[in-house]
Image (cartoon, rainbow, N blue to C red; front, side, top):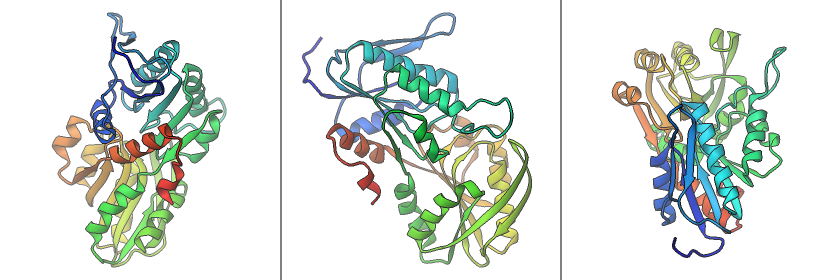
Length: 319
């Protein structure tokens, strides 16, 4: 085993998003850590770190996307292996933080899944968490360790500025929970702000939508943190076009795109869907969605990792 410097920056990854991990390593000019992440014959996750990490500053990059249970276990076991190998500090880098949608009790006898996952990550050995566009900001308070919540907005805004090209623009939040995010986009794009008033009958079924605000004769930017089955965003796009918008560009950080998202987006009035590589795109989405644009958050994550490693400010990235 080769000698290594104490406090050296080390990056490891599981199977959820190795392409993003390699891209982050390229930005930081470091090699991806040597670790085997596989399965035992019965399906249990098997992890082995194959290099010396004693005294190292280790970052484990793993989105807890589909399949969420496997990817979460890989993250936990990688951190446990590093902790038992005497790593000095372990940072869980989770571009997409799964299990974030049950973040409070909205009905009797339901779990607070985000809190349970936060406890598991902490117990596994994380000293710090780095994530991108948490579904709910209060999840940071579920941890008793530092949490850096990065915003993909600078990456998305840079691209959207080129697309709107001095046109009249309205930024639309698809529900009340996304107003703060939409307002930040509107401020940076010097755009109007509108809100969809959404009423749900069930968790994945929208009963009614009404538009609050003005979008007439505007390019409407529909801003959300994630797209799962695309029911909300495609129905919202219909409401926006009916209100007189010239076109709708949908924008979301995390492209979960569970069935039947691709069919819905393909048949919708959405001109372009802009997203990031926080989650690897499914083959179906790549094949069927010609209006899809994927932007990389690797440089953003890499810069945050560099600053954490050098004990510099992360929040100044967005000031």
